[in-house]
Image (cartoon, rainbow, N blue to C red):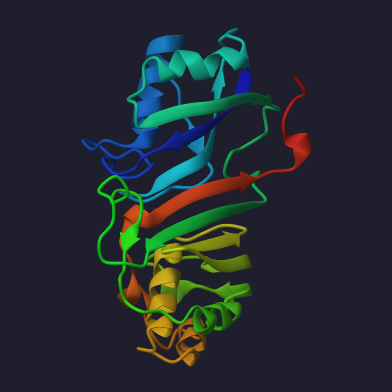
Length: 248
């Protein structure tokens, strides 16, 4: 058996998320269906991150086991000929049999795009939140520093179980009218990024004090009340050890 690893880019607008769900269009479902048809064998792909409904990916990573002799470099073209245009395979590699797209990852980076004005191009509406309210970016940056490190993020998710995560970086930049939140962590919880962004926006509007961040980390408030819409969110990059992949 071979372990094939794919980099996937997708527009998540019309999908019910990455993870396969019965009767609903999903990224995993589309890719597995096409791989089964191409390879003639049952295929189960594993993803680095389970993006929610409406969330996009610049570079999701998946892997699957196959007995097929097809050279890895041919997978992007073959799959792209069969996948819908909203899903593209952008690269293919081969890894040792023990590699797992999710559990072998060192970190994930998500980016959230917000356009800080009232009227935007209709071509951007699928990929950014329109948010014309005035914002204090410095307040937001200072508040975001409180999230850096290893904390229990249970107030930022509907998940239960182990909700401790290590947030490695949080950066907020503005380019003209576009505000970009970049958040890197060892792993993320369901809805975590959208709830963090939403809470920081309330701080930036001075609707809540920056101490609200600490209250959320101490689970004294439910940060899910601040969630922003999914269309501005992208899985941007998944990081692995260089030794994870076989040399060409």
